[in-house]
Image (cartoon, rainbow, N blue to C red; front, side, top):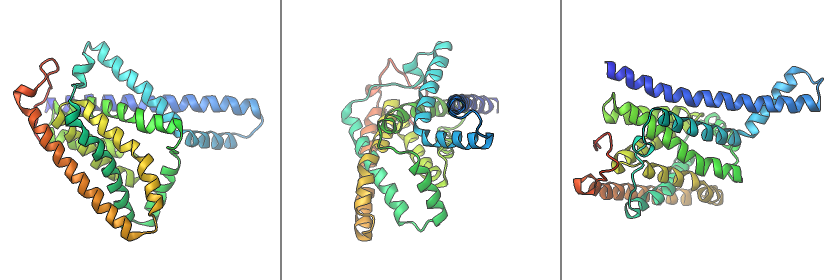
Length: 291
């Protein structure tokens, strides 16, 4: 029982770091905007100022997220430094041959397509899809800040945080498969609208399994990057075939088939990594393969 409580406590502590960073960053942006408003119109009523500040935060959500991720990443690395842990060992930064990693690049793209068409084909409530569309509309990924935040920084920070710290911490107190499930649940719940929660949970499960199979956080970062960055390919494609159900169905079947094929390739290529001869002795993993 003690090991379970210690594991949960440590995982919650890492989660608290992220929540505190969100609060402090949002507060910083709010104070900045308040000073700007005071300089522009010091006699504006409080309600107007609050509404303007909230709109400012929503309009700059990607910039806020980027700052949160950078600061939080530095905080996590500082924690490892204070505890005198080598970053490469704590995070399992184990080099993996590109010949074993390339299926993850394709899987990220095909998985993004598959999820997009699942959402298009499922009879989801209009209110649910409206909420999802409104949330997605605030992100504005097709900007430099959007690309830097969603495609580059998020895969690094979220993998360091979720699969590098929280999942590995949970593995110390729970069976590995339960640890994978719990970290995926947390990962999903932190993604807002119910549609995002649902597919982020599935992605979190897959990323957890990838971490176990490759024994390296680099593999998770690569798959996460491929999934997020593929929005620059899949979104325009979705717009071109939005009103063509047969094409949507066909594209869904192809993308689903390719996703399954890539997953099979990942399982096949990582099977060799389980042999003693293939292990990297200078970066010993804390947990053996159990998937």
